[in-house]
Amino acid sequence: TRVRLLREVGSVLNDKYGGSAARLVEECGGSAVALVAAVVRDFPGFRDEAHHPSVGKVQFYKRAQIFVGDVYGALKGQGLG
Image (cartoon, rainbow, N blue to C red; front, top):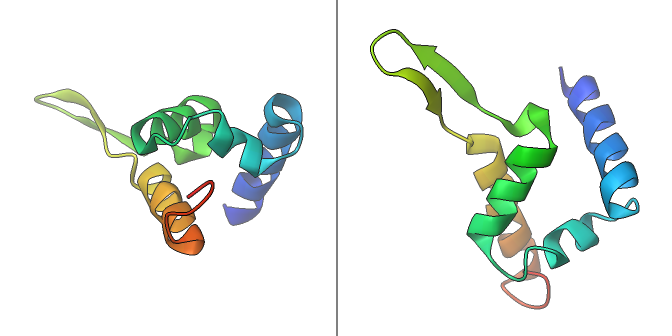
């Protein structure tokens, strides 16, 4: 649920990034690929995965990619964006 995801995000940000989403973004050094990887690694709710009978695990990471796109769009590619 959304409430569970919000709690997870708050908890991970607090525990790993001093409560700062900006710190998470900064630690990825301006790399969108690194930011998607960090979000997927640290926030289980952003791991969009499914199992397909013929290929096994399929990873989409749609939520993580949308987050990175939203950061870029909100900051218009400047500063942390």
